[in-house]
Length: 295
Image (cartoon, rainbow, N blue to C red; front, top):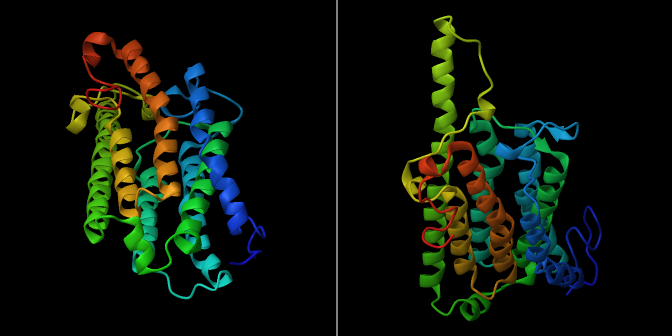
């Protein structure tokens, strides 16, 4: 095993095994940091974004904070193996790297481009998400590139049910990915309808064009019938599938899922309060915040 690595930041990006283990040991504690969100109602992004000199344009901020995750994974996946004298990674490693890139090709690139509008984002939110993506991409990329399974035997040891578990995990991943896109598009449709309505009224000379980035409704399609943040829930399903395919002994995949839940759950619970305050309890009804029948 190499005692040093070369890259953008020698020994850290990509990391040596020692530094990988150090970062991963600290990464496990991210939920404790994320729990600080329960102590505040402020979140400088989306519907709770407020005017600030530190705000960034929403579309550009999203693109630049999400992209480093899959770019870091790709960089590590191709840069680290030669330095560890690894010449041929198992096909499962390549598949999992590909799934990660597929998700973020949508989440980081297509998502902001498809949005009819995006509210400004505070610099602190951008910086925290940027850091999350770098660390997460580095941990999963390093595991796939040389610090995880390096042979078919390693994979057999990781997956008690073998190919069946790997296939089931990928199936769960794709179900979550498709549901994620579906519910994101329902939110986009709200803005699209408002755009069309304003276009019609402007043509009739009744109103001036408004800013639809602040237009909200209580969504109703799909899982929105029962929860207000199903797009959060199905993304967790997606990464649970990824963890299943990687094997429940894959610590970076487990950390990703747990860290996502820890960072997104407080936002969903606060978001439900926002919906109730804006639209009233009668219109929100008995919808859960994010997990049907639980929260």
